[in-house]
Image 1: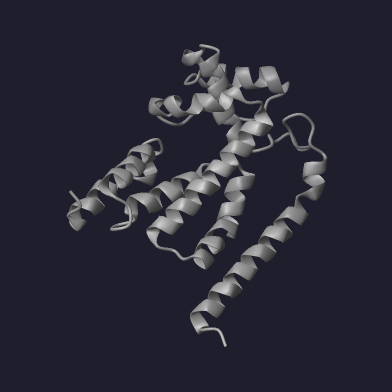
Image 2 (image 1 turned 90 degrees about the horizontal axis):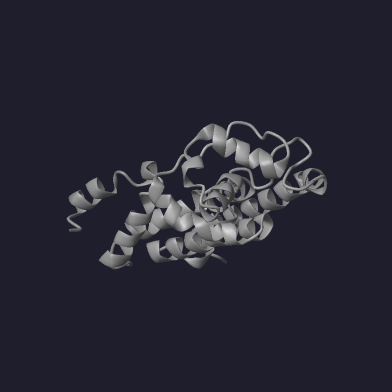
Length: 204
């Protein structure tokens, strides 16, 4: 008989997989009606990712000044989409531009795939380095939160993985934790308390 703790983890994993399958089934009609970059309701495929890809394309086009001007940014998106997709801005600090431009080298859907896989990879690595076992990591990777981040083209998986790396005391060297914390400054609200935590932990 399996230990109670392991049984509980298996139940959680099963629930996550059921949610994943149910979520995918509920989106079949929506995804089958995709035209270009848009769902039938006019929302962009990959949702938030379209902002990252637009930023990357603007960088490669040398149009840096348009990135932080909402009207110019949205006008650029309308130019390749053909219709408005609501209020859109690039709400991240300029340091993010150093890491955004490579996504513009790819067409939209390949870039979205790379972005999604990168988020999952960093989340997996962060979870393992933090100390979660394989079963626990599988639960995290199939959880509703992760699924929704993937569907919405969001950065949640990437930054959650970086946070786990930054907090993996004793399992990640100071350089690795420092690098993860540095990358977290691209989304300051995700890591602004890290220096305070490290101060109390005496992780100089």
